[in-house]
Amino acid sequence: MVSRLLIFYTCIQFSYTNVFSNFKAVMPRNFKLLEELEAGEKGSGDGTISWGLNDDDDMTLSVWTCMIIGPPRTAFENRMYTLRIGTGEDYPIKPPTARFISKIKLNCVNENGIVDPNKLEVLKRWQPTYSIRNVLEGLKKQMQHKENHKLSQPPENSQY
Amino acid sequence: MAGLPRRIIKETQRLMAEPVPGISASPDESNARYFHVLVQGPKDSPYEGGMFKLELFLPEEYPMSAPKVRFMTKIYHPNIDKLGRICLDILKDKWSPALQIRTVLLSIQALLSAPNPDDPLANDVAEKWKVDEKAAIEEARNWTRKYASAQ
Image 1 (spheres, rainbow over the protein chains, first blue to last red):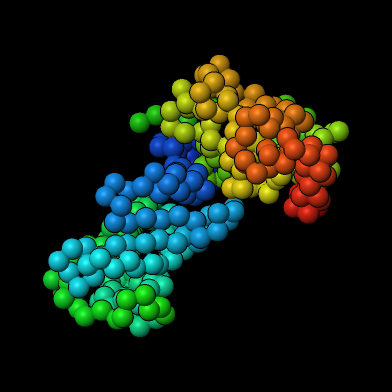
Image 2 (image 1 turned 30 degrees about the vertical axis):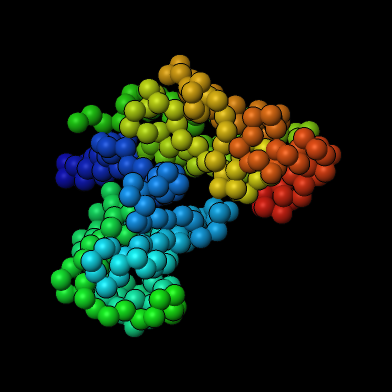
């Protein structure tokens, strides 16, 4: 009897914890993405990365068109690389997906332009506080990495 | 670390016990600061007959800063943009901690009854509202039928 009561009590405690005591305010997906959108509209500082909704009336906030300008003193220099980032329903608990539209030679990108989440640190060790911006910065860093920075690139403006 | 502030618990309980007529708001199962909201289109407005889905979030600083609210149902309204963001002074600079979730929801309901094209967020819609109000209202009715018909 006592143990039953105890179980019952624990259950109540558990659901109470679930509903009423998440200590930090966790921003839900859509509000986080709206903030990311606004940050993108303001620009990212040096202008070498940018992101915005693919369709400006996409109420689901799921498909983003992004751009990275290749960093100086690399094979990517002065080129504009376009990519799509997908933020699924479980974002930001689950990481986004990324796929290049512009052809690119980069070790973390497969032959169809898809970014391999196991080969990009920011996707592999994804945290819900990360954002689209972090993915783009991660990719830009890859372009500067010594295993990539001399890779000869496909013709400029070619697409998958 | 504190739990959910007393005020939020109180407001939630009251919203559930005495809901605003035409509006339902219930907290998300896993996030007590996130509310799923349904607003009925007010009578004698172009939104009449529609059921609009919204989401509301109480940020960490609430009630010192305003709740965040967004329409999830498409709506043709000069003060609501393509992504459902709402232009309403009490959600921005006119916010006061004396206001509540309830007052915010009432204000949104009132905004549906009285669109304000002079303080627009959706510029093309506001333009239409000013140039040809009759056509704009008809368009709002069409959108209500198309996207918000209560089922």
